[in-house]
Structures are given as structure tokens and as C-alpha cells.
Image 1 (tube, rainbow, N blue to C red):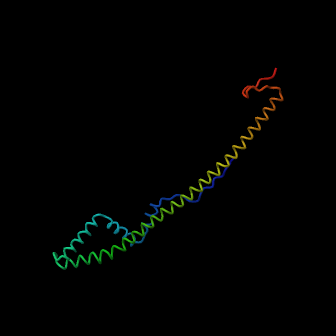
Image 2 (cartoon, rainbow, N blue to C red):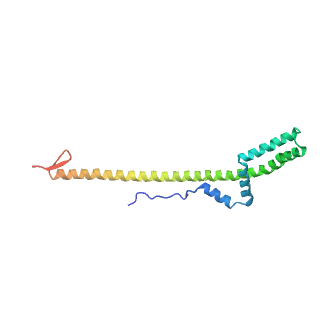
Length: 167
């Protein structure tokens, strides 16, 4: 006898980190390259290099270095680094945004699945309560019937624990 039929939610939990890694693995060459290059920029060594370029440009501006070095540092910092690394960083942010989207989507689906499961548990508990009430009523009716039978056969019931025949 089954009181309740469980209906599982169709969603199966997935690891969004693994999904994101799989997407990167099959991504186009440009996305993988941008992700790796932007990863190189995310280090303190890059900060040190950019600081050295800035100071070299400052020294060239003050006239302490060859004007060619000043122009080279200006071109490197204003043209090359900004125009090349800006799109690379933007692509990496897009890739990271996709990972966050996968995590949020998976969290939402897991929440929906948990709500479904909690409703299933609550429905199961309601069915169990109904069955317990039915069985309690049946026990009360049987107790009443047994007491009536004992009274009909001239038994005396003492404290409800011991029944002795009447003499």
C-alpha cells in the first residue's frame, strides 16, 4: 500500500564551473587567446611593467632621455597597450560574465527543484497525517467495541489494565 507517489523534478544538478570550462575548451581560438592574454595582464608583474613604461615616458618628457624613447613610450602606452588590451579585457569579462550567468541559472534551477521537492515532502506528510488519523479512529472504534464485548460477557474492567471475570 502506497500513501504517496513521488514525482521527481526533471532538473538534474550540474556543476556550472565544469560547464564553463567545457565552453572555454570548445570556444573559438580568439576567445581562448583573449582569455589567456587577459590572464597575463591580471598580475602584479604587469603592473610593474606598466609602471616602468610610465616612468620612462616621464623621464622622456622631462628631457632626461632620448626623444625617440619618449615617443616610443608614448606610443606604447597610449596606442598599443590601450587599443590592444582593452578589447582583450572586454572579451575576458564577457567570458567571465557567461560563467556568472551559468552559476545564477543553475542556482535558480536548483531552487525550483528544491521547492518542488519540499512540496512533495509536504504532500507526503499530509497523506501520512490522514492515514494516522484514520488508524487512530479505527483503534478508538475497536477499543470501544472490545469494551462493549467485555461488558456483555460480564467482565469487570479494573483501571483499564486488568480484566477479571465477575464472580
